[in-house]
Image (cartoon, rainbow, N blue to C red; front, top):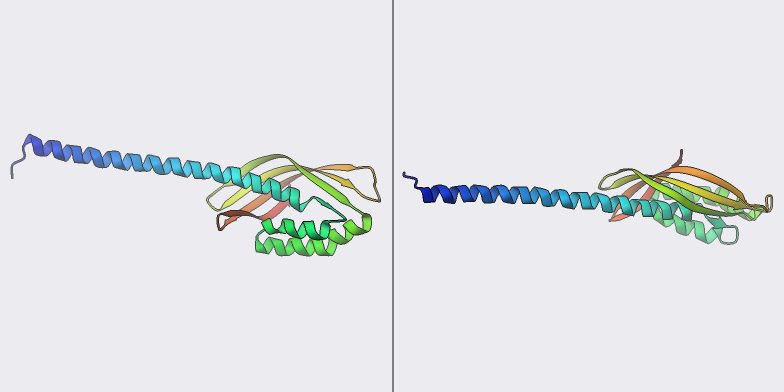
Amino acid sequence: MKFDKRHLLVAGAAVLFVAATVVASLTGYRFWSDRQAEQNRTSSVTVASDTVEGLFSYDFNTAEKALPKAAEKLTSGYRDSYMKVIKDQAIPTAKEKKLSVQTTVQATGVISTSRDHATVLVVANQRFSSTDSPQDTLMSDRLQVELTKQDDHWLVSDIKPI
């Protein structure tokens, strides 16, 4: 079989086309993957911040409604333990001492993210007032918030003080 210059040019062009397609595909995938990772970082921080403020802010007048509503952003296992704590301890204490707590997130930082898991550091201030202490008490907490992505939504799966 005889190869002439034309066949070599066509074969060379085909090889270059395949190589360019592979490079473009890999570059596109990497761009998409980086963009997805950045979106995960941003959305996980927002959910962690909003959830911490919702879970730890309440007033003795509204605690029975507000705290279970905040639990909607928790995974089922963590929600069960949270609901037990608020029903057994938080709500009765809030009513008895006429306790109001306002939590404000001051800073956040992503510790790690993957496609379906994120760990976020949250620094929050809590302002307490009650019948025992009518003058506000201010506390600052550092929390490690674990999030799990379920059905394209971030849910908090654990919160640990650090």
